[in-house]
Amino acid sequence: MVRAERVCKNFGAVKVLKGISLDVQRGQVTCLIGPSGSGKSTFLRCINHLERVDAGRLYVDGDLVGYAERGGKLHELHPRNAAKQRRDIGMVFQHFNLFPHRTVLGNIIEAPMLVKKMRREHAVDRARDLLDRVGLAEKADAYPAQLSGGQQQRVAIARALAMEPKLMLFDEPTSALDPELVGEVLAVMRDLAAAGMTMVVVTHEMGFAREVADQLVFMDGGVVVESGRPSEVLSNPQHERTRGFLSRLL
Image (cartoon, rainbow, N blue to C red):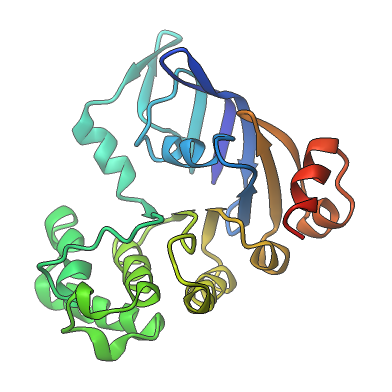
């Protein structure tokens, strides 16, 4: 579902990604871990072309992301065409980014109606199904300010799912939540994984990574230091940098 080939990304003179190569199989959950500044969130944003790559190639479901290749050279897609690619990739951020002036239902039906030209009745029916799925069926008419952080993040997940994505990206979805609210968001993510959704998750929740992930990737300094099955990486890390990082978390 995702193939990264030697992906590089610079911000000015700062090299943030230094040749990331990584495969995510269809239906697989991959968790990215590592210290702040290691490039995890930047890599996630490159997958859906919220950040353009400076070198290398990224593919989602076999399609080159953000570019067309002609004569061996890459040409960046028109923003409209890049946006068409992006609608098949759901993304959930640290902060919920809900429209404060719209109800929960209004937040969820906006993109399907605007982008996919879905009829309102269909969009509303699907939104109610998704709210039921994330345990918020009774909050359809509430406004974001009336919800807890955990509830807002579950609405954000439902909003992303309303576009019927083939891939879901999560950028530290629980980091802005009070500790007692983390579990309700992780429960929704567990259900998504069990249903076969392909997911790439930047997280510091090692319990979730151990239980749910098929692949655990440790990044540091803009490179993949180590990857493998979560039980192996967490229990028997092969690299000193991995051991040092995990010793502070586990």
